[in-house]
Amino acid sequence: MTSNPSGKLELLPAVDVRDGQAVRLVHGESGTETSYGSPLEAALAWQRAGAEWLHLVDLDAAFGTGDNRELIAGVAERMKELHIKVELSGGIRDDASLAAALATGCTRVNLGTAALETPEWVAKVIAEHGDKIAVGLDVRGTTLRGRGWTRDGGDLYETLERLNKEGCARYVVTDIAKDGTLQGPNLELLRNVCAATDRPVVASGGVSSLDDLRAIAELVPLGVEGSIVGKALYAKAFTLEEALEAVAK
Ligand SMILES: O=C(O)c1ccccc1N[C@@H]1O[C@H](COP(=O)(O)O)[C@@H](O)[C@H]1O
Image 1: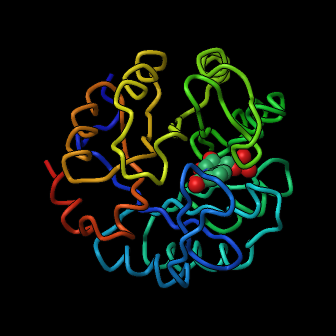
Image 2: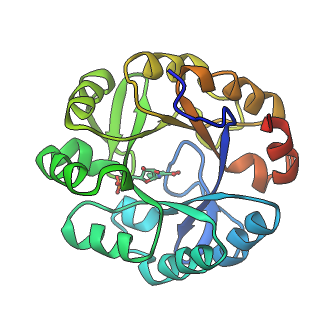
């Protein structure tokens, strides 16, 4: 199914925040951080390079080691002023954290752990907020992982079937084994998820080259709408301008 009417793959550069710094992790493991300085400066760099989206993650909130809520809200608010859409993730697990996330003016939030541990609450907020809610399907093999990707949370396809029935608008699919590794995306996983849902899918994990982005863009007709790009941009494997050009139709 084609979910993206423009036919163009959206790119979402990532700004993951830990202890007030923009960082990249390997396999999402705490302690593997490489720091890239100010999250706002990183976000502004992607905006200046032509980003239309930002994938903004509070890693401390995801790991349960505190939060960067004020800093994240400042980044999201500045991006809104600059007309950059923000997908906000990390630690959004109850009414209070959801209200705080939505109050930043972000375009949508991405729920991970909550979709595994409090499915009734997730069904409720999907019904209330529609496409402002995406669910992050963070997987090892076909097993979902929550709480900073440290705990198993059930089978990918069973959860997907449930969320489809509940009207979930969009999925952000991360192959944890690929994330932060520059080893290339898991195209088979993306194809399998697209076959199991008619909702748009945002790809995450492993992008290492412009060819990887072109390969993900080939999946737009199947339902892949966008791709998060993290480590490859920070490691300067290519520029965001080059990436946007590579997926332009
Ligand atoms: O993005 C990461 O590298 C990452 C690593 C470890 C845990 C989470 C990570 N990212 C994002 O966090 C949300 C999940 O947060 P929560 O479970 O809802 O609190 C997930 O969607 C990822 O985008």
